[in-house]
Image (cartoon, rainbow, N blue to C red; front, side, top):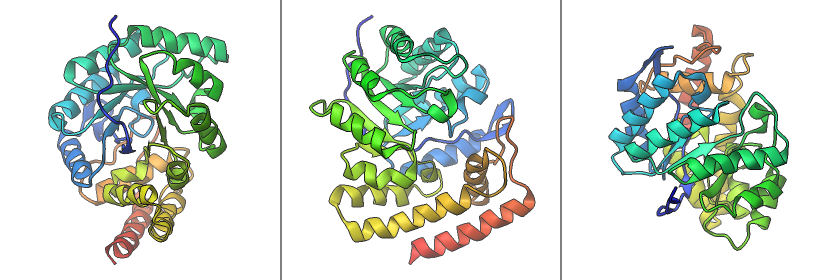
Length: 309
């Protein structure tokens, strides 16, 4: 297979787009349309669909394929689109990547398969198998909390020798790991390094990272774009101001309730309150209760007041 040619700089704020749902079997298409325009008008630099925040592995294949088509059609080349293809089946990952390519997506993102735990040699061979068969540039996705395995920095370096690997999205939350990969990949500016956890976004950019994939950007896209710009300019006063706001989101919005899915519940509740989309989650998670939504609304009012001043 002819290897894809990378033509886009995958930098800046690339939100992990939530998947608006009406039910377990149906997308909230009107909500999805509003969400995409909300993100674009907020100045984001790209979109990542079907990731963890997008509940990709929890959606049926029919919904995954439909979501890719809807987003690619609506965006219409206005922004780069990254599509999550993580699966326990390599063949289904490849088929989704092929579908994404036919619709005009720009790259795909793959985490390790999340049931059988591989060692690093097996992991390298798995990713090389994908890369040899996928018609789009490929980002590695390090998400050890969900996949039970860390893509070691040395494995990232080995895989970067393959022409189809163009970057790493690291959601480990381990800044030392991120900085180690940066150091080992020095001299390869065509390999993009993105961080997931928003609480370390500024430090990752100051360390030399290319951008972030913050879930909070679904709600406040312009806020995270400003944060990225401040870090790039080394505007420390602005960075500290914005970091304080994003930490309030991290510590208060994402921790309402006792569910392991409280982060997703918080983001979807906030978007529902803002009138952007439905707050339905893919099973096994449930939407916030009415009492929990009151807490979300109170926090949103506080945040809007702070951001507008």
